[in-house]
Amino acid sequence: MNRPRALVVDDVVDLAETVATELRLAGFEARVTNSGARALETFARNPADVVVTDLRMRDVDGLDVLDGIRRVDPTVPVVIMTAFGGIDSAVEAMRRGAFDYVTKPFEMDALRALVERACRTRDTGRASADSGRDTATLQRLVGQSAAMRELRALVDQVAGATSPVVLLGETGTGKELAARAIHAGSARAGRPFVAINCAALPEHLLESELFGHTRGAFTGAATNRKGLFVEADGGTLLLDEIGDLPLPLQGKLLRVLQSGEVRPVGSETVRTVDVRCISATHKDLATLVEQQRFRQDLFFRLDVLRVPLPPLRQRVGDIPVLIEHFLGRSRGRAPGAALNGFEPEAMDFLATYSWPGNVRQLENLVERLVVTATGPLASVADVKKALGDVRQIDPFQALLAQPMSLHELADRYIAGVLENVGGSKLKAASVLGVDASTLYRREKQRGS
Image 1 (cartoon, rainbow, N blue to C red):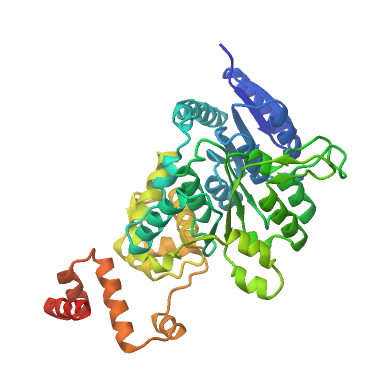
Image 2 (image 1 turned 120 degrees about the vertical axis):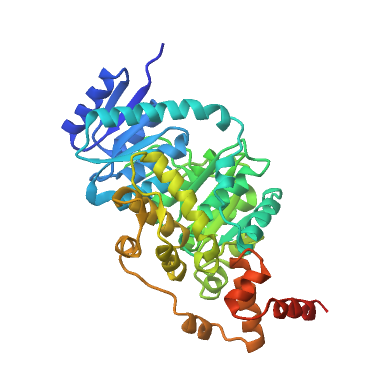
């Protein structure tokens, strides 16, 4: 019987060797690399069944290792090792697809058990992954607000089309999740889904990532690289933060979208690819075009199907179900956690918070409290401490920021209250301090 293969990555070689030795005693075939860059090269030549990587390393950090591994094979679980001070980054790693994380100093027995569980989870999930349908991703478009119902309906419509898509929304609203849902519901679901953040890499590396390169094309290009367009052939490529794509690369991207031909850096050979592009941005691309920071022809090429994602402050009624969802996931990774829920006052406070980081910030908050809470219910004080810089919505200032008539204000407020109470006119009337007949009469007048 073949032994499961583990790759251990840490620039502190003694620790990496200690972890590898423990895994070998547990029946793994374990290899060690002392840098993130070398780990990615090693994995490309000889894939592992599980990767254990340190978060903070000198050349390529653990998040880059995670992203690189997932680009090659998203089914391979990646376990992150971090000091307690790096928990926020470890939470970010979980959001980006890490299997789990351990904080240093850790017990070797606990790490070994975690790695064994990661391998079992991968084996269990392979059959469902072969179907090509990312049902878990579709289910994570959580919420029953009108905004989320509209989003899910639009995602279903867009998934069935073949045109390029632009996802519009603030940071943390779940643009990559929506992109994965579109891919999962499309005819390309059985083919690769590949994502890249256009703001995360310098221009010369971004060009190589997108289009590939030949060996020796530039300093450090030790081997040929296919590039993400080729990796996504037949599937979907998400260009996250497309508004930050450098102008010279915009022209090259336009040529690929028009011709379907990719030419690696340093090569005279072109390759034809069939890729559906989904772009995502929190910026106003039309304004960037006016400012001559984004090519108009590329804008028109990409801006075919638009999918706007609502900020969390516009769907506060979804906060309880989102918290329940994130609590379930977090407690599944930390079964000994004490936290079971939030006190009513804490939930009221969360409904008034401005959520600059949107759903991602809420997810991170729940993950942080699951790790740090000592009691079953999180209080307002617990939430404020976990949030740090607390900013609440000033309702009066919010109204001044979007002037409207008194009639429109009343209509929108009543509609919001109705949504928050599940559509019950009796409950809404109680909140508004009016008789229910007033709401029925308004509804009849508007329908006439």
